[in-house]
Length: 126
Image (cartoon, rainbow, N blue to C red; front, side, top):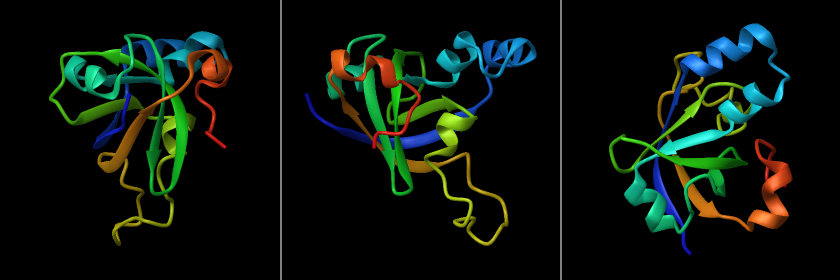
């Protein structure tokens, strides 16, 4: 097991949108916004199995996510925009635009112990 670095891009997913209509506090919505999409080879490189937990960290914070291998470019990580992703961005670091840069931030991904971390998905890694 190791750690890999990549570029995080936040997105909106169709499932996220449909679950927002029902409840932003329900388990399906929270699961969707806590699911990181990455290339299967990146998933293997970090040593996390499909559906396994990992810690995603940026210079501004870190969160626990569930990893899903997806057909995306290697080195690019995709996480739905919302409370989980927001932990990784700074409201003060706007590159003088006045808007947080939700479309690209350097992050690292590290595996975590499934048994110890399964109940903390979507939470900060304190």
